[in-house]
Image (tube, rainbow, N blue to C red; front, top):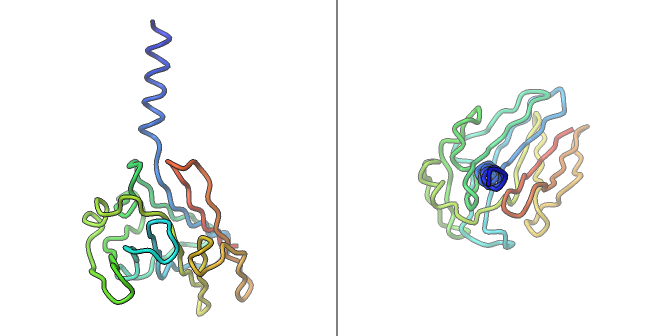
Length: 167
């Protein structure tokens, strides 16, 4: 009976730890800026889409990693208070011409079934977009002025880890 209890406790603990995670890994000696991080439902061109651009650029120091995370299995980590800096506002676009700027805490419950779509990164004056196949942006590698951006997805279907690496 004790073994069954421990196994059940272990399985429940694993479920609590499952999370969606977005990571931008900066392997360069330069500061990387995220100018826009975009999510959607996982269907190319589908709406709603969420854009981080109303928040302004997010700065990632040289050789640092920026992580957004949530323990909710169905929501993208729009609200990730452990991230530094935090993204406090998102634009929820319902079409190519219509969108509303909302706080991250309001975006979080609206973010059911949202997944990473693409990101625009910048080093100095050089900007590149990298994303999932079908987003209009290649997963990479995309090279620009001595640096390369790539996208990969790891984890599981219920706990994906979206990785963008700049090197």
